[in-house]
Amino acid sequence: MGENLNRNNMIKKPEEILSILKAEALGDKCFEHILGYIRAGMTEKQVAEEIERTLYSLGAEGLAFETICVSGVNTNQPHGVPSDKIIEEGDLLTMDFGAVYEGFCGDMTRTVGIGRLSEEQKQVYDIVLKAQLAGLEACRAGVSCADADSAARDIIDAAGYGEYFIHTTGHGVGREVHEAPRLAKNSDDVLQTNMAVTVEPGIYIPERFGVRIEDLAIITDFGIINATKSVKELIII
Image (tube, rainbow, N blue to C red):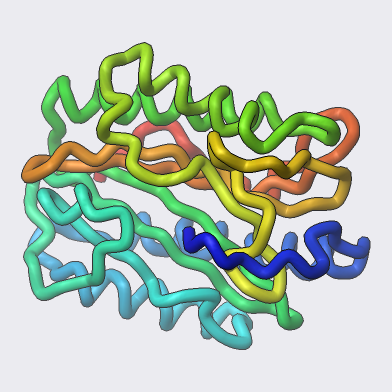
């Protein structure tokens, strides 16, 4: 979530919002497929390749960014690159991906469990989910991006994991997957109607595991339209 984000066209036109919604819908369909595909014993690269193959088969014009698919200890890397690591029982698996459709990007992240999870893994997942829901709830026209960030960050801080939330809560999405505004504690931006932003808090515990959950939200006067429909309750495959 770099500092030099495109500040042009932060407020989307109705037809642009429709394209973003369509792009994100491809991601939802892909996630539904991938849940039935993942098996312990596959590699991260195998799952990432299936995600990308599926997005194209559903009609994606391209990929919004290089797919992130990381498991086990690799989930502690927010921008981890899929490797030949075997996905094992007891792993968390984080998948962050997006399609390009009609020139606009989708962006979503889901973290799932493989086989069985520890109570700590489940607890951290629950904290991230509560933070993500609070971040979404805070987003509406007129709210500062700093306050939207705080809504999610405060929950992770209060749970004692604040030092492990190592990026901003979200960013704008459009023709590029990373655009202004930034949902960050040092942001001077204010959310406005018809902005499209991600809400994606995470916890990343060094040398252990991480969790991120991300939706793509369209800002309105009354709150958000959540473009991401995929289930967020913890799924264990």
